[in-house]
Image (tube, rainbow, N blue to C red):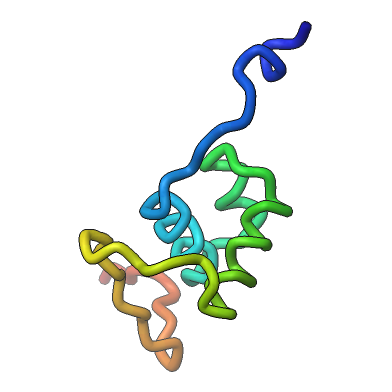
Amino acid sequence: MSEAAKRGRRKWSLEDKWRIVQAAPLPGNSAAEVARRRGVNSNLLFRWIRAAEARQLGHRPDSLVLLPQPALDLIPMGVFWR
């Protein structure tokens, strides 16, 4: 029996789901990369994203702090020294 079969299915809390869903569209992230870093199957993450867009993921926890979306009209290219 494999180690994954011994553990069974993983249960994700609603707060964890929302945190992962909201990290996916941030600039510099890809949903697949976020899923891999968090140990979530990318298909499952995409299902959560679609559910959130359809308002079916559940109520977003009040304890979840939303990060502000940066303005995309100015993208810093680096630091220049004299």
